[in-house]
View 1 (spheres, rainbow, N blue to C red):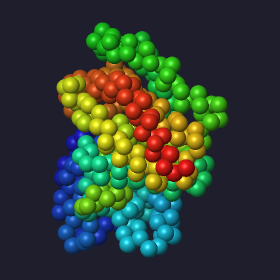
View 2 (cartoon, rainbow, N blue to C red; view 1 turned 135 degrees about the vertical axis):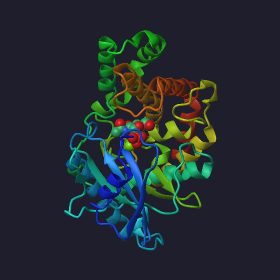
View 3 (cartoon, protein in one colour; view 1 turned 30 degrees about the horizontal axis):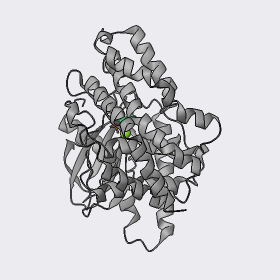
View 4 (cartoon, rainbow, N blue to C red; view 1 turned 90 degrees about the horizontal axis):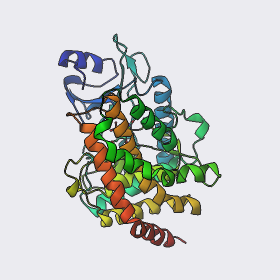
Length: 373
Ligand code: GN1
Ligand code: MG
């Protein structure tokens, strides 16, 4: 996290139209890209989240913020039209706070971009899922998110990170990093590279299906880590957060990225690979929750594609972590030496386990889908 002193942070917070006096501004959350702070205020009902957007990753911040406005406004209209739901819309959808200048972001003198959301009180997010109820609610949340956005015109959403989940391009980038070997680390990762190379063909399945016109392009979240769902005090899904990567995509990407965190009994970056095991009941619960919401719009070929997402997403994360490791750790925040390598190894272990259980997972998907036919 970059160094901003309390005074600077308080001054930044005051660029936005907030109610109450700023008490303090403290680091918050565990994102790998942006810097997030909690703004504690006195004299109002809610605190706020202040975020510095990583503009090295998100090169077009105005387009990014326009996406977030469009998505949140669409979701709000949808929840409004439901009626009968006793949770206020403002608790279900993120609310951006405008700046005093009437913009969705503030640019400071050093060129950093800042934005602010209302912090949703009495909610929790989990890095590791603990119960089937949590997993099921996660599935409902992301399924509902896709469903409610299924009638938003995809042309209105900018592709802020082009080819974000294009495995061909990700592998090409890894190849360049290997060839350049800028920080002399390639010699340490021969096994990982072999593991990745051996699986390249299979990992192109989704792209091939898409190229053959078999997968509809939808608006997807593209960062469906379980900690991007806020649950209420009863562990019911309340709000999907982290909307930076909402872009056109395939549902299998979102499904696979969620399962990557839900099925794993250990952390994304677990150093002890023996601790990484699959929790199948949590997978079943997520799948059940997801289909409750998504069954109404999924095509048969999309249902068949979900298993490919489960295999691809941990693999793609490993490719990305390994690439960053070989390039000298400039993309993801790292907390210690070799952190990206440790993350890549943990994700590759997950790939191995998912491969070994592919049929069990596929059966579960089909059984769940079968309940709706
Ligand atoms: C990054 O910043 P965060 O933690 O929400 C990354 C995702 C990865 C994730 C892995 C813009 O998300 O794609 O899945 O790390 N975001 C970007 O934990 O690259
Ligand atoms: Mg994110």
